[in-house]
Amino acid sequence: MNMDKAKHTGEELLGKAKEAAGKVTGNSSLEAEGTAEQLKAKAKQVGDDIKDAFSGDDKK
Image (cartoon, rainbow, N blue to C red; front, side):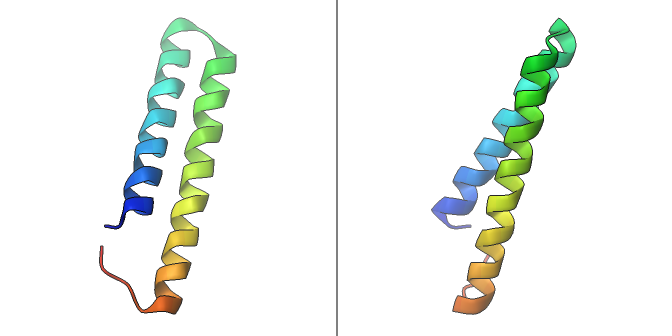
């Protein structure tokens, strides 16, 4: 796993934590922010996968 993938995985986990905190506290804004961060991180991961496919660097 390269540094970008590790960073994006961390961003996704942070988003999950925010979403969970928002659910527990009843803070819909924080929950939505967490969901958005997860989606953004997943999109970056897809971009990394595409970049790796074209560069031949498919190590995970």
